[in-house]
Image (cartoon, helix red, strand yellow):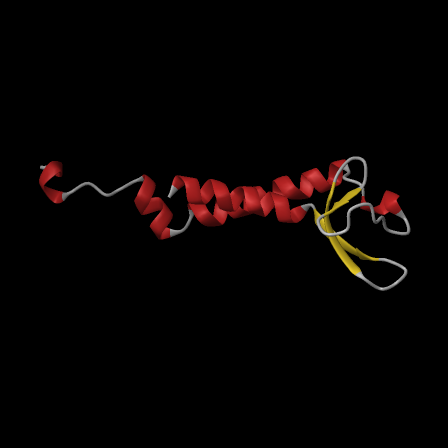
Amino acid sequence: MGSTTVLLAASCMFFTVTDCFRTATGRLYYGVATYRGIWTFNGGRKKPHVPAEYRLRWNDLFYASLSLVAFLAFAGSHNDVVACYYPAMQRKMMW
């Protein structure tokens, strides 16, 4: 359960910094925002019209950390996750 939670938390942060843009021909490209600009998955060296709009900024990292905190809060309040990390003691052990 722990590895699944870590994987989902990492994907939550990853998808926060993804973006897409259209070129002059109208083709849609997907990518990840980096400090140098957007890194496209399927485009190679294609760049948007205004590359400065697709750079990773500090507020993007702030939003990614907020989404991580929100995910961990919801995951930590779910009954199945809580039961996995804090299993209830059996009645025999209590007496």
